Structures are given as C-alpha cells and as structure tokens.
Image (spheres, rainbow, N blue to C red):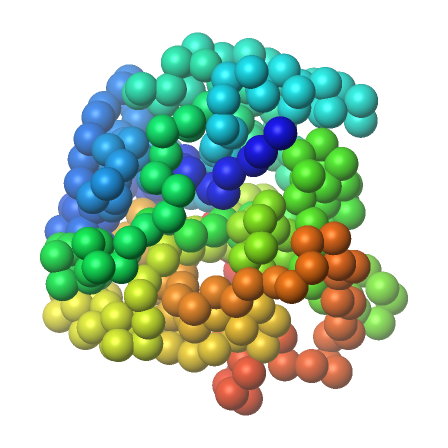
Length: 300
C-alpha cells in the first residue's frame, strides 16, 4: 500500500475572474479544464493534471487530494478508514482524467479525496524543469497544505485519521501551556510535512496552500515578480524554525494565503515519534529570529 503526496487542492475564492487572472498571469499556472463552477489549473510541465481547483464563493479549503499508486489500493484505504469509523464515499468524477476515487470528510470540514495516479512522475528532474522556463512566479509543483481549525474541532482527531487511516506520521507538534495543540505537521513520506494543522479563528478552513519553488534565488525572483504586479508579501523570505524550509507568504486576490516553499528537509527515521515543543520556548516561525506577524494567526 502506497500513498503519494498532495496532488491538488480545491479553494473557494471571493472573485473567480480576479483569482484566475492572478493565478494565470502572476503565479504562472495554466488553465487545463472547466467543469460546472470549477476551474482546474496546472503548474506542472510533465503532468497535465491540475494542481489547483478554484471555485466561486467564499474562501478557504473545500477539499484536497492525495494520490495512490493503483485503483486496487482504494479498497485498502476504505477498510482502514472504516476500522476507525470514518465514512467514505466512492466517486467517479473527482477531477478531469480521474474517474475513480474515494472521499471522506475531516472533523475540521475539509474533504479528502484519494485518487489513483499510477503514471505520476516519480521525481522531478532539475535538469529538465528549471524555473527559467516557467511563467510568472513559476512554482515547480504544489507542495503542501496547512488546514485551519478552531476551538471546536479537535486537531488530535484529525491527526488520528491521517495516521491510523492513511499512514501519515506526525513530525512536530506545538502546544500551549495547557498542552493544547496549537499546530501540528504531518508527513506521508520522508519530507517534513505534507499536511499541516494550525489553530485559527472560528470558521477558517485554510491557513495556507504552499507551492514549491527552487531555492532562495527563486524566492527573490518571485518576490520581484509579485511586486511588479503590485502584490506585497505578508512576510518573508525567511526560514522556519519548525520544518526548516524557506518561506514567503502572501494573501492572494481570491482571499487565501499562499506560501512559496523551498528546501523542505527530509526526516530521518520513518516511524520516529513527533517532536513536541512549547509555545514561547522555541521560535517555531523563524529560525533567524523574525517575529511572526499578527496577521499570521488568521486563516481563510
């Protein structure tokens, strides 16, 4: 049984036309399909499937998809999820070119879709997919998603579903003085995180959607590109204290936060216990000492 990383995310946007213009002209994505109220966008030169789905109405994360290696494995994940009392549904229309899938809903409200992707490239070859060939900001791939939760949904319940139902491993947990989870970072492979959880204001479903960029030079070029279009960064570039990846964050015209992420570390030891850190004892936001902006506590 093998689970792949994040393959697409579906975000609600306040203004579909404005969001499409930003994602195509500034970010550099390409529209690959439209179905009903959904528009499918891709940044991948090797894989024509979409990495982003945008739909009109509101903000936040409606759903996201994880790849599986074959259709036969869907039944295995259905059984694992049923064993922990998670209700699943078979789908035949998750996205263009993805005729079979299994979907379920997290306690935080987001829908998770498992999609067979047997032909997905195993790795990105830096010699044939360089940033100079991409348009706009030019991300190489979708990187990870960090979902928002408030005092109602239990982040531990989400982490339990991800770990017991799908085989995720928890890399880090950030707790307050009462040992309540303020954030958690989970992984399906050996990179530090594929799905994050951060406590935000009630009603928020997304903290950020992250895109892969190559390095700090790409971060700088991306910031220049955004500035030339009149879009300011919320914070960054910098390097996180937890995770250690390079980051830049911005609020998009559609009302959601994007992260540009590079140099995500790999974790040694697939079954290692999570590192638990206390708020205030460690600068989880920045390894370089930068203060977390006040706006960073809000999601969409």
